[in-house]
Amino acid sequence: MAHPYHHAVRSARLFGGKPEDYLAIHDWFDESKAHFADFRHRALRHHSEGIFLCASIFGSTIQNSDGKPIPVRTIGEQHVTDDLGWIPSVKDWLQHIHPQPWMGRTPFRPQTDATAAAATALDLSDGMQAALNRQGEQESVGGRASGVQRGAPGGAPVCRRGDHPV
Image (tube, rainbow, N blue to C red):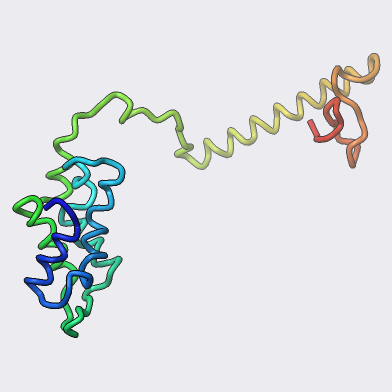
């Protein structure tokens, strides 16, 4: 169907009430058209998981203007079946995606071992201590280390501009 309103008209014919009773649900299924305006937008919500997600958002039932409770999943099933002729699973959609190299790249590598994370933190603190020791040696030999001055609270080194600790 071309527009959520046409789905809503069909829902009113099937379940009673007015098209406006069903329009929010059908609008939700087709919201992804705003981002991808051809049939591929359906891969995001036109499947069994999308139908269950719709029910978790709108509730198990809605009450139409005739006062009749209508299961939201039934409305979702009608929408997907009207568009596709059947109700696919997420797998049915995703198995047809052709993997691209960028899809598998991840520059971020989180620490997987608590001991490795602790060791990294310890290495960093040792490095900071070594830098501070070198700075102290330079100051005792011939004045201040390049770009560093004293004056932060507690005598901690600060940058040349003096607005944040080194």
